[in-house]
Length: 89
Image 1 (spheres, rainbow, N blue to C red):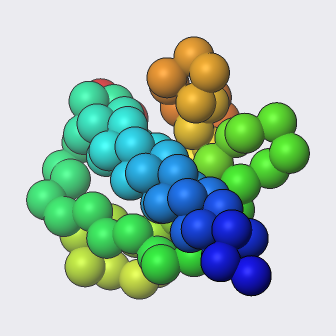
Image 2: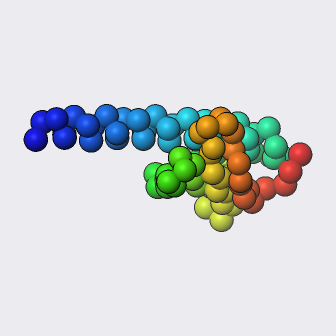
């Protein structure tokens, strides 16, 4: 039905907006807290948990072995938990 299709489309748009916001905050978190970061590449995969946390992953400096993962807390507008394969500042 059209109404259900519209609802699904709005949910997808909201989800994508949330993922973009999570990536922006994760990028800032990495750049501010870690040394020698030249490039940050995000995976297209993400996970949104039932509480609204958004997990984003990727790798650093064009090296697929230098991985990172972080959970964005959309309520508090910050990265709550993160693992970054880089030296802290």
